[in-house]
Image (cartoon, rainbow, N blue to C red; front, top):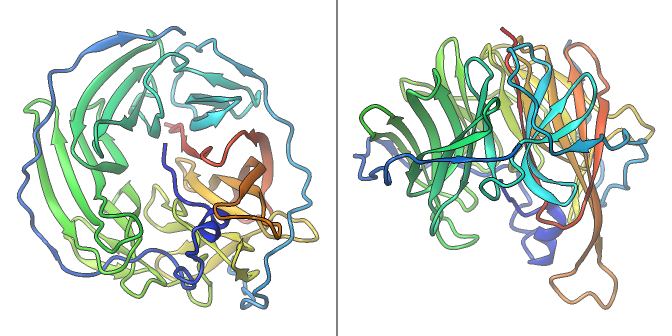
Length: 400
């Protein structure tokens, strides 16, 4: 499960001035690095019970009011695992803390039901990835120190198989075939809030147990993090922040870097899990702040940006106050025509007697659906947050 400090939490530690500009940066030098990471002990298996839009410039620096959009009702939750499914695009894999449980869930887009498929499995699952035939889900859990453990859940047998361990925090994961080759971005995290983080691109071959780190991005600004790793028809693309702390760039398989043309779109300075490249490699879904931003957060929208023309479809909630609070984990459908994403809305005690860190009161996470050509997203479900560390990530089942 990814945890990034929220806008409000960032205020409590006095970092708002630090993030007055946009997304985390990469820069520095890019070069080849030799691999020195070895896989852990052999795999083991455990059984788990079951149109272009003109965007206005920011006009306010005040904290945005809370959204008045009526959220969708919470879905029913069960811990009975479903049988394996064909790849029909009908289901989302969701990680996070829902109904008081930090687990891996399946959300059925037709019935709007939430199924816990990892009730007694490894803790804090994150970065879910569907297998090529949709009968399994790969996911990452925390390992010792800052290491990451990659696992595979068989949806029919409910068996969780440990695959490999990596020394650093795996941010994004691609699984080729049914687990023959893994490609991932990882971060060697420096001291908190420092400029020491380094991003790596690494391949792991299951048959040989060998790691190859084939790209390295040195830190030049604090909060340097990759934003997405995507497999597209033109190859594997890494989406990363720019050295100006105010834009995005894409690094291709040839390690050539190209900027993402965002035009007049102002990026949210608080976005961390903000962006995803479409499966066809033609667009990027990104959190932007056309409603302005202040010390406590941004008035955000989701923008679907064409990587060739720079045209953007800006999506709001359709309410009188149209902006979202904080957008996280956008996930595309297989045909690159729809995006699901999470909106995270939090309430904090910032009263006169608030002694840092201030007190988290309550919050909600709403699952939204955005469709190509529509300016307004549709709410699918809403979940109560029982603590500030409740986050979530979404992966859309392929449709083949």
